[in-house]
Image 1: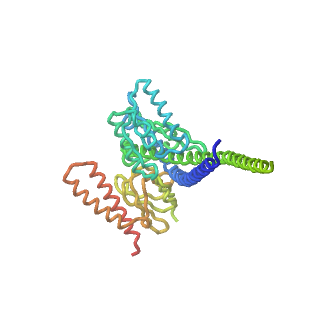
Image 2: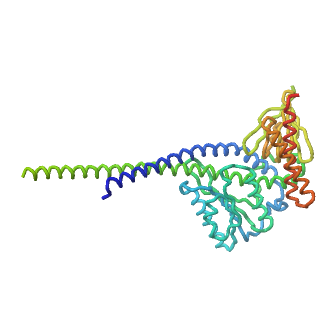
Image 3: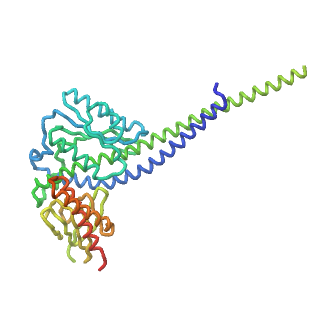
Length: 287
Length: 140
């Protein structure tokens, strides 16, 4: 049986841990609000972009744009977006697991797989696989469009030069504060957006020509997709950390309760023992 | 009173303008263009430059960087990477950026690095547009 002092030390240790997890929970909650707000602000931009892409791409021959060209798929690149930090439950490992599964499946089909890792967690996980082509870390916190642009340009360049015939983004989709799911989205070749038919009936004047507009818009569209994935991952990360830390805090509470019970029992046993000694001594003196 | 146009300027950081206005002038791909009410459906890419709009005889200016613009049913939507009002612009910073870009352009002029030049030119454009917007903002 643990001594009184041992139990006491353990209780105070657990208490300190629970203070930390509680603080992390609150920080994550605050950051989640920020990330969610950014996502809400970005949404109209992304939606309008999609609508405009739909208008443009309907009735256009995809083959004339290198970024939309569908080739026979021999090699696939996966753009894996995770968070930079851990301690957020199974959020990152879910994305990584799904990536791994997809990798195995693709390799089973005889395709070559390369990886571009965004976020330290993905970078660390795949470091030794030898398939990593590029790594971007420490960019998740500050949402700057130019970070997304750098990644999009890099990946698009690789696609255009034939380094990969298809590119997918793997990220965590933010569904609600409680639910974040790993998600996969085709990045390249750009699929023509569906649902542009309604607005396409209006005869637009294009300046410059539609093809030239597409040449400008396609790379921007890629930026939007990468940026969107980064926002989703960041919001999901904070939401996942919030619930993970909440769980940790309540687990700490449980441990403290059971340790306090152990402590009180041991203390009681000690007192009883001492009483027995005193009573025994008194009896002996009387004798 | 003439008919009005609904102007929306949207950036990744949120909507910057959502107002009904009389006239919009924007830096299009093929040069500056103006849009009044009942304009035909129109789609153009936007360069770095100054977007201005007129509302009740008041002219407002915005510095915008690359994106595109869509006009349909008296609604003008600008999707740009950034948009700044004159009051938000840091003139000193823009001036410094302009000097930097000038120096950079002089440097790359001798060599033939196309990427650097495009970047420096874009920086120059941004700085000049910012200064222009900030300048117009000043009370006369």
